[in-house]
Length: 411
Ligand code: NAP
Image (cartoon, rainbow, N blue to C red; front, side):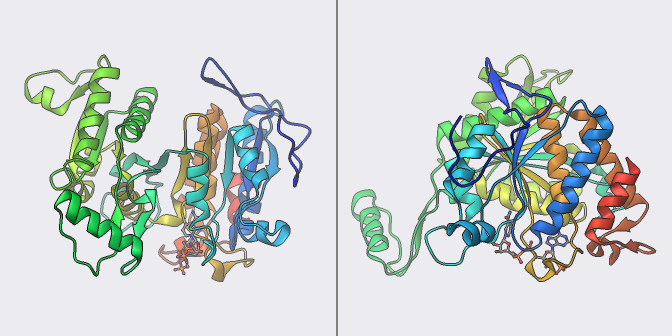
């Protein structure tokens, strides 16, 4: 066990562990949490009550989360003089799990983004975003109910590699010169330049996680999203490596779309297909129900996740997780919405539904279902926070805390 120098873990909990690669979940797991900046504390106060109530109701006192507050963002800066204390990283590594609210992105200084730093340091290589519709949520399309997808977005490469140089810097000039002299590619000298690396290792492990998820959760399709018609050796290679993983590592479980054109049966198998990024944005609107699990490189997945979330009623609702081979970090997908900080008005659903994902990951499915259906009921009863109330006819506008009370009462 590491010794934490700045903050102290709870004494009444047990860490998650692994046995032969499988997660072992005790009845009192220690779960580090970061409440987050801006509206983060409002959201966390409401969410943690919902989580504890669901666990108490589902397991009658035999299971309980031992919450462990760790710090990042403005609160960490105030208390410890740094944005991302080492104890926070150590806690997440040690306990293999964490959940967080939104964090302010520091402007200037050494850290580009706390979220990106956490993902890179902990090698959380998949950003996982389930998007589905909760009946009654105001949505901009006619059939939002057809959407039920899970997006696995690569989290460490492509534009997230962060390799770019500003126009006019010696680094940009050097790179432009190298491209021209050594590789025969001309770039205008007044360009900013960036590098988009996509590796076989990084692409394959992401697609592998998406297919494993599809098998475990009995999903029908895994779609590889890419722009390989133009970027053949990065995006196109992502598609090719994806099919290679599917056909060599999961042969008994999958059939590719091309194989079905040649007469192979889909029966009982997961269909693996691919779509070019621009077409998938049309298809998710026009043929929503045909899509299920997506595996995408970083930038495509960024756009696709928000577009899908918008289609079912917006970002205040969308949960997310960043997952690696050993660690899972659940988080709100929206920002800190600072103008509402401390007002107890913001919608806590993104963190609450991230908690649903977390309970699913722990195998505490009863608690997950209780929360999900109770939250769904609150929306159907039109007992909602301001963001949904302003779009619903006849809704009662609730404070964040009262929305949590309603969810708990619905359990
Ligand atoms: P934002 O905090 O997501 O807020 C933009 C607007 O979205 C809000 O004013 C509000 O709209 C709506 N909104 C966001 N979350 C909501 C919720 N839970 N319930 C209801 N409405 C919600 O985006 P931002 O203003 O661009 O970013 C603020 C800070 O957050 C920045 O420092 C940014 O870097 C950071 N950020 C952090 C994360 C993260 O930690 N994962 C993600 C994105 C941004 P209305 O004004 O219409 O009510």
